[in-house]
Length: 271
Image 1 (cartoon, rainbow, N blue to C red):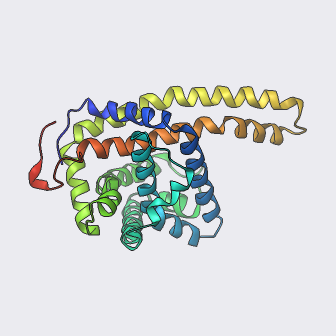
Image 2 (image 1 turned 180 degrees about the vertical axis):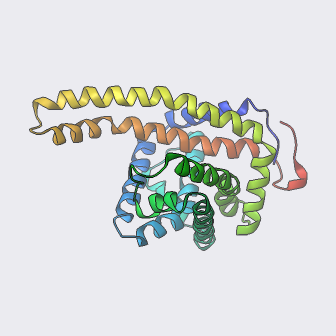
Image 3 (image 1 turned 90 degrees about the vertical axis):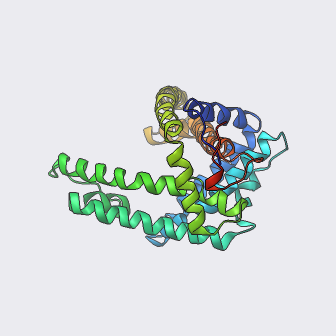
């Protein structure tokens, strides 16, 4: 484990784009499959959300493995989406259960600030009505964000540490939180860079969606069909952007936990 310069936060995104470019077909199909599975699971009332959350760490390891293969120049298949299910699955599911419990705790504490508005929105899909004071919802959102930040740090590297470094769940959470905390400058640059990059990506997607929707006007009978055709045509842009994001997770892991360095809290080194 090592402490990296703050500028490396931007490099993780650039490395993510480079990794994606080495196997775009496999990445887009894997992301498409992942989103399809997530959407299908959520069709099951309440139970689907629980299943999805429990499996998130396993899918996280799958995308890490896909990034490792494509970066190494080896041919990767979309079936690597299930690579994280091949080993250490009980530990990864346990991490998913801990993540679910953490989310419930965050929403429960945020309910003390907004009366449960955010929790109802996130869990039951019930957005607040127009009569709800926006400042109350904003307060709950700020509380949830502040509480979720350390949770995100603890789970950032935990799945891959559990799967690849054979760490028990609690130990992997500790090392993940410790690594992110000690590299907070790089993660701050990474977060700001993601926001900066997302703006042109959103504009490009909006332009493509509008263009493809208009093109579909000649063959689609209704506005709904035109919009559906436009979304289908523009969707690969979203899949590509999601692929770069997922590959950047691996870039951050490889940078902070290089293969030739020991994974111990007492072995922090500068690059």
